[in-house]
Length: 275
Length: 286
Image 1 (tube, rainbow over the protein chains, first blue to last red):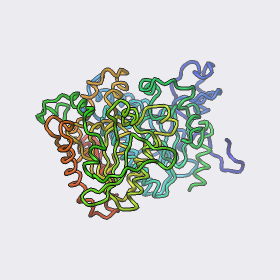
Image 2 (cartoon, rainbow over the protein chains, first blue to last red):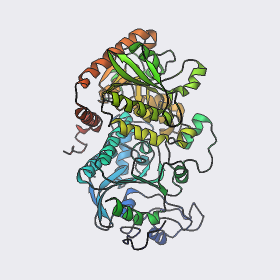
Image 3 (tube, rainbow over the protein chains, first blue to last red):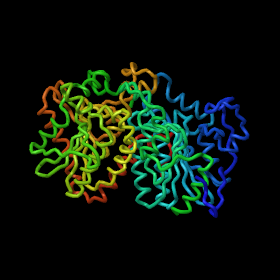
Image 4 (tube, rainbow over the protein chains, first blue to last red):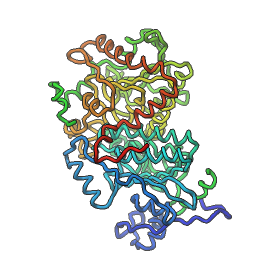
């Protein structure tokens, strides 16, 4: 899928992506990797393998240079259930914060091809991108403001589901966030969802599949129950490609499977049409 | 709020014993309650798209003089029936049936009673192929637009998204020996330890007992069960559930639907407000 001729030029990335730690060879094709060229292609190998990106890289990719304004970045997770085993939850969170990560979801406003939008990006490096109270709060607040302000909402997901260490309050985030998704829809605000590898559990069963346009990255694993648990529970042999982006396209769950190198130009076109 | 809160409440049961009681095979299931609340109950079947999900029962009955829409996860008692009911684990068709009946309730202004008793949504290949994630997501979102009063009760297991998909309501209560959890203890152990044999530790960490859930502000009330547990006296358990559910429903019947929907939104939007009160957590916006 390429941009129709005559449409406004939107670059494949808003600004230069940060360095992402890479293996020496591509897990897709085995070819030795070169950071500079990969970065220029949004971390997509020539063979089509998509490397996972954190929220910082997604923000750089999506937002026009200099337009990102982060919101509620100071809201922090902390241990509510006195979770101690196998690792104290508070220590896990503190370590990730010290490493420079800021929760499983970051959100804020930016422009994309000149269109002002709300952006929320999951970060799989933060406790598996799990939906926590803070993540849910950032998502719900952003959606409420997008609904009130009439700004399109763009979501990039990469998540294992709800965060076990926050117990039933993490589960309640599905309802909190979906209530806000409903407000987005009733406000007539466009909602686009980019599903990246992996998107599972409570994140797939809440906002990630509820957009007006669901776009999956090639090869991304997307589903409700992970394959390990399905095999444990049902002893089923799962076919190759089960729960892949392509599987979800074939089963009607996403509108398209699109290379990351074509994503931003497409979003530019969608924003032109939906706003 | 600590994981020792239960012993402070003076109960002698361990967390794992509560989990076992919540799953007790002699425990009353949804139809046992529904037929006691509304003896004229008429079951309705099917999602009008492709199938009927026997893990979720739904239908109409007269309750306190008013036609009411009943929905509930249904487990089976014999092995054959348990298989037929898929252990109360819903497929996508079940969520679609529930929404169909919720829309019907909206049409006739019937209040809705939802009884929750599931280990979770069905973790199988067929459910994935037919879009279980989107079915749950869509259900949760749609419940916020159903303009009639909804009261829900966790009567046994409130497992994960499968339970929450039936648990968006104006009031949510729990029976004393029921549990509500982000994941089953086995699944949580599998996720956190990669070893589902650590289920007892997981259950203790999760704070899934009714009193712990009440302390977190997630449910409105814990309903006492007959001595020995709900399975020892179905009639008494049903009477206690009936009284509590109707007491919660009554004030909702007088609310205009716009108020009802706003309050339902706020109930879940600020369901973690006890956490907001914590100074380390960010300020609430206007």
